[in-house]
Image 1 (cartoon, rainbow, N blue to C red):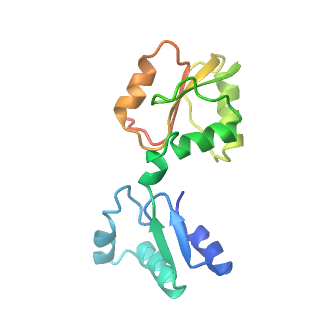
Image 2 (image 1 turned 90 degrees about the vertical axis):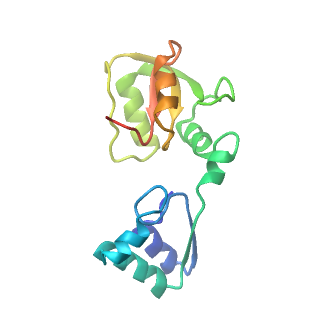
Image 3 (image 1 turned 180 degrees about the vertical axis):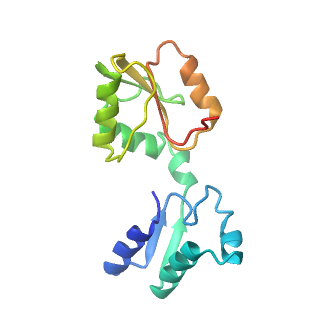
Amino acid sequence: MLASLPVLERAAQSGMDLVISHEAIFYDHQDQARERLAAERDPVFRAKEEFIKQNGMVVWHLHDIMHDCRPDLVDAATIEAMNWHEPESSAYPLVCPIPVQSLASLADAVARQLAASSVRFIGDRQLPVRRVGLALGFRGFEPIRQLLLRDDVDVVLAGEIHEW
């Protein structure tokens, strides 16, 4: 997903010189910070850029193809990692039926199965969850809002959200 410095170090140690990354390598979605960080001589930016150059590496920012596939490859990988049933429809955003469990149990399972260091959730810990709406990554406000308005969706699993 991200060509972090530890990922780049592992690639270099393995003799790889091409890293394909879903997200931009310099800290913003559209990769627009690169020029500003270089002009400011940002030390973190410089260290990462220098490591890439010293190791003759190329980082290929390949973002949209994963989201252009149907099903979206991020959604499909999450569904597989969680061992959930296939979505009820291929319409986006996806809604997955899951074995009934509490919201707290679901949050624990998401953290464990996706190896997340933390998961935040809002709601009644004992809420029975049967159907999960997926709004992974940066889907914007409207898809999340539409899922929240649905009576047949118990939980929205969101990635990068607008909290304001």
